[in-house]
Image (cartoon, rainbow, N blue to C red; front, side, top):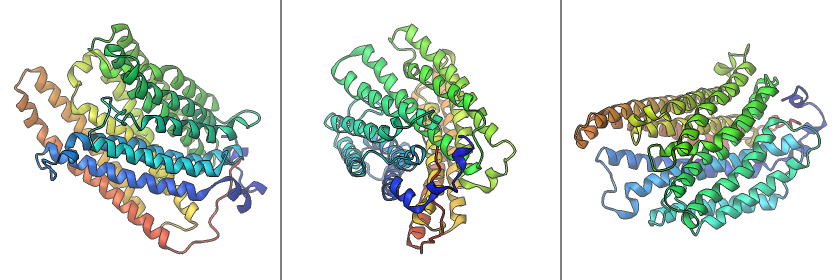
Length: 471
């Protein structure tokens, strides 16, 4: 972000201009919806964890069976929390970078209502046993057309102000434009192609691409795009290297779409596709390294901000977790390593590390920064904000480390040809630690919800700064 983009003391920072650009009510509505769905998702995770410890409180009730709650757990975090959080943040960032409002605020509210219907209907369909047999694509077939239409409307609503920008675009907008196109195509590929057009190993290959592209072409560009906006704003200095930011963008665009088949190594999918997925996965780690270097170059000389600025601490914690996630991914996709950890809890730990440790932490950091600005009042308790961070970060770190280590023990047990029940006995201590780590993360969420509620109830402060930051 240029030095000019960081200036906020001109005519564009007047409250009237801000109100004409940013619909703060819809940002807040998306935040409330996101927090509702992450609460549901975590409860589903506890049911799964309790089932593994043979203490399922809903044992014998088909609609609440662990398999269905497991799918609800993953879908609620992806489409309920992350998608809602990102949509709310896009309503804040895009008008401020383009100096233009979204295409139509009425369309924004229609999309908001429709998306909640999609997520809730998906949850109901899964609990009723109508899920599709595709990981992350369990959305019932009768929901898919509505979800696809919603993604199209989202793209139209947000891309309109972006394409009207004259002159060079900041890299955040590059990421956003790509995400709108990629997400629409990725959802269609995963939810229609295997269902209606291909079968066998071809469907497996497409399913693998969908699983990973949902993370890499939907969540990742939105997450990193928002980082390129918020980090310079909070540090009050430009991004270290605009050139490196473009290297990261084009590296993501070139290598990430090829990664997904690494989910199906040692399968009948042609080996040249599996080799290609391995090579491109390792290449992504090199691309991510350039992005991480860029952000740590930006904070160079301002390291104390990690201690004193809580949103910055969330952001850089997520970046460290992201680097570790991609480093882990580069290792686990090699055929040698995959032979040991395939189907183990290592993969579960890896998924939690990226979905909660990176993107959820980023969204929580952005909420921590924006909620006081939107509500025009300080947090009810800054100490509770600290508790939320530490309970979330520490709980996630313990859970990821526990599941990754437990996965290695499971793999060693299987490779030594011990009886299956021996691997279950080995896993029990790790599953016990996981549920305590999950309680820490859920405790952090409860603290955040309480702090949010008490802040909402408090008296507003008219002097709160909501300056527009032009691109």
